[in-house]
Length: 248
Image (cartoon, rainbow, N blue to C red; front, side):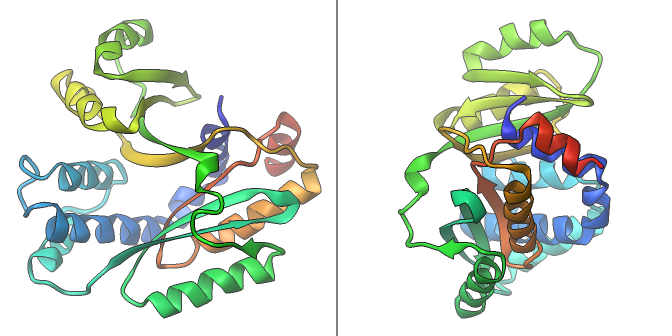
C-alpha cells in the first residue's frame, strides 16, 4: 500500500475523521462554494468541479442543508476565496506541499509559516519542491458487491494507472488528464465513490527514523488543523515500523 494510503488508513483507525468532522465539512463547503463561483454555476451536470465536490460531501455524510448553504454562498458572492499553495520541508528533510483556500492571504501566510517554525520545518519558495510531486486523480471506493479484477479490466480504458485494495476500501489512481473520464466511467458503472480528488503524489519517498517521522507528522497535523488549509501532501515513507509506532 502506498504512503498516502497508509497515512489515510492510520488516521481512520485513530478516529481522526470523526474527530475532525467540522474541519472536513468546512473544507468541502469551501470547495463547493468556489466550484459554483468559478466552475460554471450551480448545476452539477454542467459543472464537473461542483459535481465532484458534492460527491465528496455525500461521501463524508455532510447534511443536505449544509451542502445547499455552500451552493447558495457561491451563487450570492460571499467570501472571495483565493487558491494559494506553500512548499517547505519538515524534520528530516520531509517535503511538504500545502494547498489552501483563503479570504485573507496575509493571515494564511502567517499561520503556515508559524506552523513550520514551531515544528522544526522550513518554509520555502513556491516551485522549490513542486517538481517532487505529480498530480494524480485519486478515487476512494468503499467495498461493494463487485469483483476487483472485473473493475480493473473495465476501468483501464478510462485511464486506470493503479488500483489498491485496503482494509475497507479500494483506491484508484489516474493521471491528471484522465480524472474526468474516470469519474464519468464510475458514474456509468453505478459505483459509489466515497471521495474523488486531485492529489500530489511524490515521485519518491523519504525514509527517516521513527522519532523524526513523528515530528514531521506533528508538523503536518498542525498545518492540517488550520481552517484555511484544504490539503497537505508529503513524501514521508510510512514504514511498517512507523505504522506500528503510530498505532500504539
